[in-house]
Amino acid sequence: MCKKINEAFIISNKVWVIGDCDLHGDSLGASPTIVNQAKILVFENGIVGTSGSGSYNGAVYHLIDEPNFYNNSLIPKWEAMSSSDDYDHLLDTNSVFFANGAFVPTGGIVFDTPGGVTTYNTSLTLTYNRSFNPYTPKYKVQWLKGSWHDF
Image (cartoon, rainbow, N blue to C red):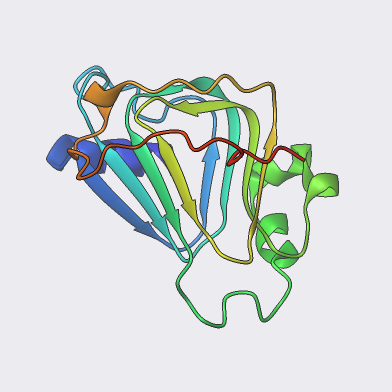
């Protein structure tokens, strides 16, 4: 799947993936022609599994907007992914994103997946580099005291 996404990034800096995506390995966005290009990758109505390490110089948006997406357990979808062999025992019936390794999108990551579980099975250092997000923010974001809830 990484190869197809990288090929799409050569054509456009905005790639939209509909359905499940197994990012197995560390080659997403690593092609010399696109590595320093600001880009955005959208995953819509699918589960996303990452395995491996490496930085992805771009922004990621994960969207679940299908009303019936959670009507059935998502475990069978995970079982079809080769990367889930490493972490299948950590999945919930509503797991929609699982990172095993160090998948670090340096342009930001947004999970718009109401009702879904996102899991990082890794030590995570969040970094943000504005130059790797192709969209100019409309609003100035600031921290609101007491807004972070780590449980």
